[in-house]
Image 1 (cartoon, one colour):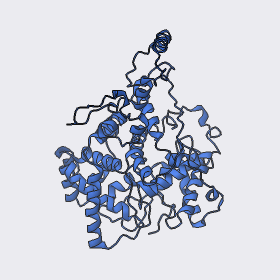
Image 2 (spheres, rainbow, N blue to C red; image 1 turned 45 degrees about the vertical axis):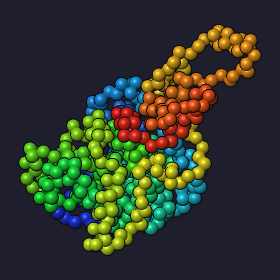
Image 3 (cartoon, one colour; image 1 turned 180 degrees about the horizontal axis):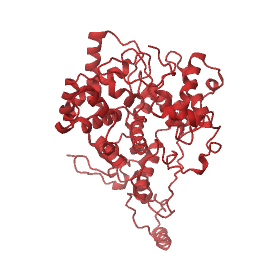
Image 4 (spheres, rainbow, N blue to C red; image 1 turned 135 degrees about the vertical axis):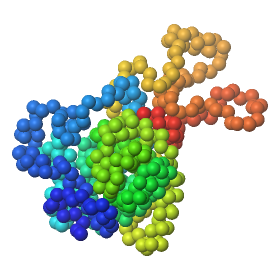
Length: 473
């Protein structure tokens, strides 16, 4: 079977059918049939008559398949907390965002065998989003540029159709050049080997997911084993598209936030949560007597388990760590080598999140200057900070006069403690924490001379589970 033909509609694999050795069309969903009519109407959404229709906050046309119904309102204070913490993390996560790169890839013509396939896939990516609603519009043009550039950047891999929705989501949030380099990071660091020709990496992760499921939900694991359903039949699109074609859009954005920050373990956790709540009880298993019913249950998940608040809470609390995933990875890799031989795809070790990527490639990086969209009054403390009362100017002047009268050298003004605490946020521990079982201090030096731990230094440390839960929720 060819890597991607792009000509015919999607074919649901028969129960138990092996997907080994192919890269199936993963992006030709139910939207493809209705998109041809829309995309042939004009060059942009205004010309197509969509300017008069309402657009939701994510950019989808209200009433379309991509748009969501009644959204859960998030309190403004929660949004401010999330934004302030993400801005703090972004200052240490800007290597691929701020780095200057040459643009020869955008100017090259590209390989014709990939250009034709990419061109046929453009109108299938989120056709009810205002960026991609029309054939030849600016969204489709940028999507073509990004995907073509990747085939030039990695000619040995070429183009995989599952890369198109990934690139489309990136283009909704950043310019084309940044979207391209972000796609490169996803393919090389976060999900290496996922888009190779024979799907070996995704098959290996399918075995890892299935083994972890035995610990998370024995009922679901036993049912899938009894029905002899290969993991590739339900998890391929989940993992290769990073759930961008599975979850409601608000949930997609939350999952991607966690995925970029912590890596592929988030993709595993989301998959395990969906399997657990879709097939994790005897009552749910009884409703899926055969392979067909089980596959349909996993393709038509309950809206409740995909809802943003519920899903994120479950993902954060699921006890599956990076160490467990990598341990299982070594076990499944050894089994693969015993039964199938060595992997043929180039599969370097994946890195679990932005911090691991930055630590693996140390070097000077300019600080990303945040531009928050939710602005606070100048005198308002950051959410979660414990601002202390600041002495008045008159009190400061009196203190300076007393210092000069005693003949002591005038000390420079101390930094505003409230701003230090605001920059660090309430998720960090206090700066002065005595070491356990430490000997009593005998030095006559004042305590203020103890080394200080700056907020910037603490922000470079990895988030603990409690801190990440506070951030994501």
